[in-house]
Amino acid sequence: MARQKHRSTDAYLVGVTLTEALKANQSLCTVLRTLEGPFDSLDDGYPEWHPAPHSFEGMVRLFLYREITGESYRALAHYPELAPVFGLEKIPDESVLSRTWRNRFDEATREFVTTAAHYVVKETHDRGLNVPEVRPKDEVVTPSRDPDAFPDEPDEDESEDGFTDEQIQRTTRLARDHGFDGFESKRAENASYDDTQFFELQTFMGMVGCGTPQGAARFQFRRGEEYGPHGDTHLRAVKQFEPEDLIEGFDCASHQLRSVLAGDASFRRPVTAAIDITTVPYYGDVQEMPMVSGVQAEEERVFKFATLSIVGENIPLVLAVEPIRESSPWDNNQSNQVHRVVRRLVRRANEHIPIETVLCDREFDSMAVFQTLSNLDVNYLIPKRVTSSERDAIETMKADGRDVAVERASVDVEAGSHSMRFLYVPSTKTDGTAVFATNLKVGPDEAETFCHRYSRRWQIENEYKSIKNDFLAKTSSKDYRVRLFYFVFAVLLHNIWRLTDFLLKAAVDGPMDNAPVLTAGEVVELVSTDLIPSD
Image (tube, rainbow, N blue to C red; front, side):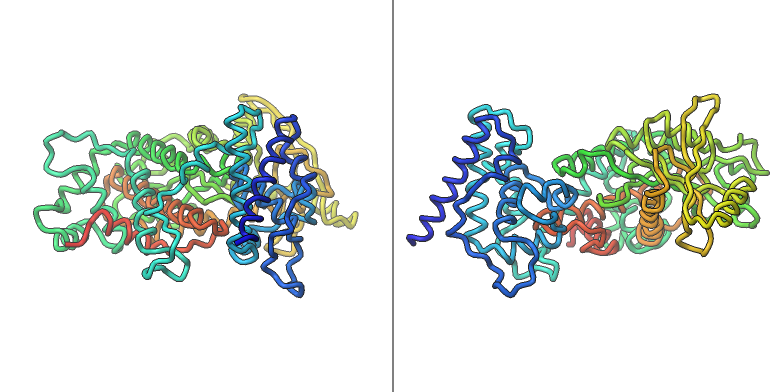
């Protein structure tokens, strides 16, 4: 008991010391670097032979910083410059931080850190000190999470990942509510079915992977014939969503999802995004089907959709969707100007999260796209088609015995001009040389490392597979409003899945890697089950 009181006193002493130093206008980093303790009453949970490379005292300082600022594990892992502040050789990654808090720190050490840090937060706000890094006071006075939604004690229904069924259901419901609120069919108020009932049916159809007639019949069998709409009723309701309204609704949903993430520090900084075009097969007559496109050198016919998605370390969300209307032999469409698609996607996405760098594939290799992104004040990294000019440069590199080269160039089009570079680096797919275009000032010494960022685009390929295999309901409808609704809704369910995964991990301070703790199918079933409660 005496030692426990001693630890509590030491915690408040640390809090007072830090607060007084901040009051004297010292920076938070300086205060933590010069803090001398006391830490004697704390026990290192790892024995001396444990291979942990980080000092115990350094980790205590680091977690004091985390509790004062409210930064997530993921955000801390991206601040290597903070390592000297805490006396560490480097900042640990998310998994190490999580294990340290749960395993290396015992309950007494965790209480010591939170007591000292929360004292600093409260005093900073109560005294009106100007310390912008300090988190809001209400985050330490009032629990930031609903204790009923995220109980501290393990539940008998807890999964292997550490989440209870109740946690998962509540979290899914939160993500779902933020995802669906932006859509409204604008049907008459006295309509037989509410919009939500059509969303229920669409979710169910995506879950079971069937078409509208079969999905509606199975839905009615589960919920009752009077509850669910018939298949033809569902299609008529879907056609009430005009393409412009669907895109606007999706933008509203993106804003709602972004509001859930507002407290995460990593989303306060510009992100890396990928723009790509995906296809959904179409079988049937193409006459009077202006939104159907042909695939070059093939007989296949498809609908095309462009998306802008977050890639890299952040939660993978689709921020914007854009229908593609191309010129085909069977219609009078103008040739698709892809730079206009890029402009619309980036502008809409920037309303939710600032975009720093855009990655595209070779389909976007054009001076118009380069200038469009430059005009939007966005960096780009785009692989270039190899023409005779690039082949000549590669031959020169071989003759000189060079693997890497940087060629300065400029874009000068009607929409503006800017300087840019072509980066020649070893290909990661073949034994040859890959060529990339970028508007960043990259030198030969850093070109190859810089181009490795392009590998982040692989995430969007997995994203498309999930959208089309796990969330896209089947339909043979020729009406483009139906096709667009089905695709946009599938993307929305994908976003709900990834947001649910993020919220579950954040609830237990787990590592924010890209491997989800729930499969796509599990989340779709949870959304559908929550929308369609059991009898």
